Length: 123
Image (cartoon, helix red, strand yellow):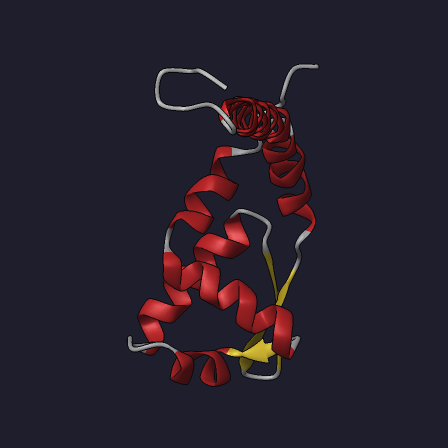
């Protein structure tokens, strides 16, 4: 099975730790206006707005006008493709862990076989 790579926009959007925190905030709080997102970050309202714009452009955040304010909510669907792509590499880690398990078992068996013998290998 070949791993299909997710949209580059999603990668770029989640590279920044502040944007990842914004996604978490929206996951926990639901829909929020910009004025309620901004206090959670040590940056200006304009900077927060730019980060939210990057997330929206990647499809990770939906914007909704409500009167004079814009409200933001998480859309985690684009992360599913990223999750599937990362899951493709689970087999790599499973193989590494299995190799480590076999190595440890071999060392334990070797150690167990060596018990009862003196330093020269005599019983």
